[in-house]
Image (cartoon, rainbow, N blue to C red; front, top):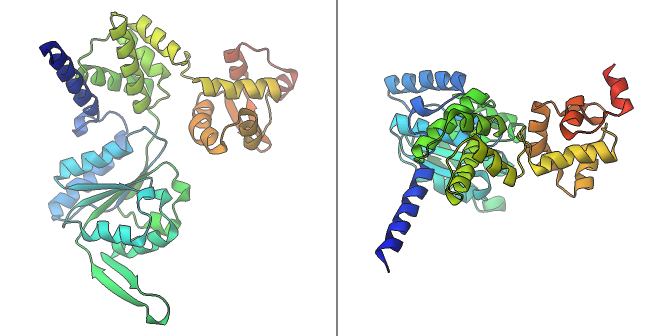
Length: 340
């Protein structure tokens, strides 16, 4: 192999490492969610002063807002080991028992998408969180017996995108708090883009960062994705990463100036052209698009409502005047009458 190939391979490897470093490793680098950070600071400092492990904490909110990052920061700043798993990965009670019994005193267990735990496993988790005991039933029928194992003190950190699917008894066990992560402002997203660009070794200007931030769906993960795609476009076309390059790169991805994706616009177009702007039910929209209801409800709809393109009514979803203006379609009479 040539030395040139080895050098290219090394550069690619370094770039991959840089991408993984976008996650903040210090509280000072975590931008936004100030209220949550202040509450966690008090909780963690108090636990450290008492010489105990932090209480159990639940984070919830839309994908990409930093729930997993907060868990990593808690583990890093408290100097504790963190074991990571997810709700779907814990299929049997034995899986949970194996994880809990292998924890060391003071460890942190992070369960992502905890709402996907089945009820049987939740019931085993209650006493583990509350009293540090694990109840295991061995055998079946009249010969069945219960074994109670004492667990080392640990902290459970959990994250979910659907907090309503977590049973009330499980939610109440998170004595350290249940925290909702909010969407980010454009200014906060721009700071995140600026920080990520520096880590990736990219030169950007304020206009490029602003263009990414206003299209990033108020979500850091999306902003970093757009930044890296704009970087790729600039690299291939041998251009500086400026506002024009960002616009060209995002146009290739189908992202418009409001941050709407092709699937977002398709929802608006179907509602406007086939259902006269609504009201129309979610199931009808999903059937018209050959899409799953959950995908529309969890991914597309929150942003469309946040941007003021769709409103929910008791009779169904309706387009707003802003949606028609964005699509360049004349506002129908039924909407005009509704606005009067």
